[in-house]
Image (cartoon, rainbow, N blue to C red; front, side, top):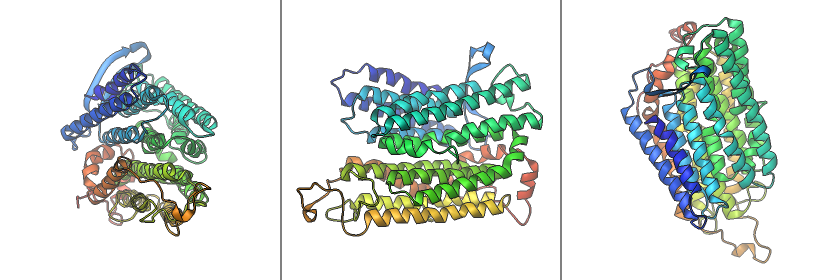
Length: 512
């Protein structure tokens, strides 16, 4: 069943390429069916998944290139299960949000399907070389999606993304090769390498390469500069995938291969990682305050919120790692909602400029429902109780504070700054007297924004509902990951520190 999650999108991509050019809706409908089918299979796996077991489940293993140690080896655990489901959901949203008159639809939807297959394969891969192959599969499709269907500076943004991501892949591959060479193992299977032990110096060198490689993908400061450019120039569906899913490859890689394979080096680097997280959170939040473009503001907010995940990973406690996984899901849903809404505003007004737009919450001539959902989304991002963002950040901070109290408090400042820049966005764009770029021949008093069809509202409503549902019932997500994240704990000293009476950690997050 795991192979179906990868090969259904790939085979559908081939069918999409064979569609007659005159059938414009054919590629989109095929893509919706294929991604819907993969999401249905994922839900079947969820109901069959044993959340108590720490062992990989639904494992598949087939010999491939034995001389290279490359095996087609897939498995699912509590770390990858939520991310596979998130990938299927947001890919379906991205396909659904694509306008019907998109140029060159066959190539466009083919590339989207390949990205979905590559990301799913990376989350399921239980062989390091297989992970690297899937990790690189999404590189060229995403480059083309930005370079062909992007904005006016799409060439620059796509090339910058390509260079940064290529460097990331080189460093990760070098780390994987060094890991196998230094351990003397002839296979790149994860479970085999997990039981090997290297001296601390060698672990530190490999960890350095992994931190920079995955740090580019997350991205962390100062490797972040490709992300705002890519978001601004990419179309709305691509921004949804980029922020909601693709960035999670970096955090997943750090958890799976950094913490999972190099525990001693991780403990050595942990204080520096926590400080790095503070820098990313504060820098991303402060830079977001200075932005005038709605899309760029949301992009910089992603940099800040991904820093929360790094803080949780650095703390390496049962609760903080659980919070890291939940923060990945939370950020995916919230950023997906915000980018969908920014795309609707841009399509109806022709602008994303905070100095131009005003009063879009106007009930008669504006975009009242879109404005309401935008307020909903920014409240979730700022950690308003009752929404998924509050639960994820609370778990991250609660699990990290016993280990890194100073860094945790500084990261909590980033949550306050989130309220600042999103309050500026909402106040400027949605309140006040209606003001948008209007045709010169039409008086502003007579101008009415185009109606937002229910087709455009549906993805945002779906994501908004999930944000509240998982905010009220976080256990519906957390229960699948608790055993797997606890099994990642590598340092008994850290666990003992958390188990002190002064810093009790609840072993399970109860349902509300």
